[in-house]
Length: 253
Image 1: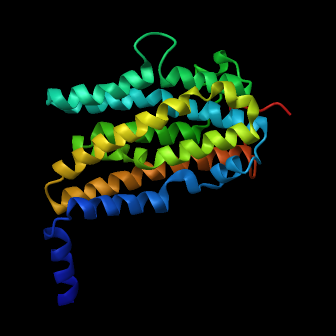
Image 2 (image 1 turned 90 degrees about the vertical axis):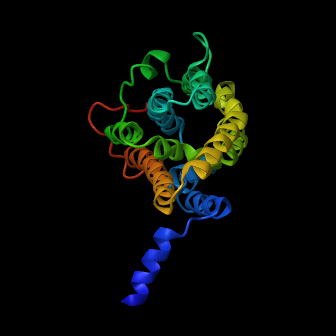
């Protein structure tokens, strides 16, 4: 019993070094990031139909459209102009500086390359309720958390570059009809690592206590769970058992 108490005291009082914190975060990604999800494994093996790829592109658009809103929520939490100047780049990356540019528009182009009409994608017609709930949970996490936790929740970008690079190569191989819509991924190859470097530097310098460091790790865990839950909903509806909820997108035979 005494040993358990000492272990808890040690856990609370001993601050992780920046290297130890990075290692803990890296371990979360290696264990929980959604590149391991069965839906992604099927995608990368070329096993998905065009209809299943359309369902993925359509549902993922809801997440993409919420990213600049999430970043605006984070901006509003900070009273540091230097932080805001750095972070607002993310909104520009996704919204663009005028119509027809930015990551959100590029994702619409990917959905169009899959065979969907723009008019189907933009209004979120047919989005799965599980996807909507997961994405909205991410906004709630950011809205209701501290700036430190909100920034930490973005650290899935630490792991996204390798997934994006792999995905682009395999999409060209297995889903050549998507090639005209791959501009989104091209942009993220440089944007995601830049964003991850900034966020990592921020959390390692602003998590001043062991409790705050554990909050950072928990935030990344939560974000990985949210991404996984989105794919769970898509896989359940469109792969196995194929139970599409009423009112949701139904691929053509």
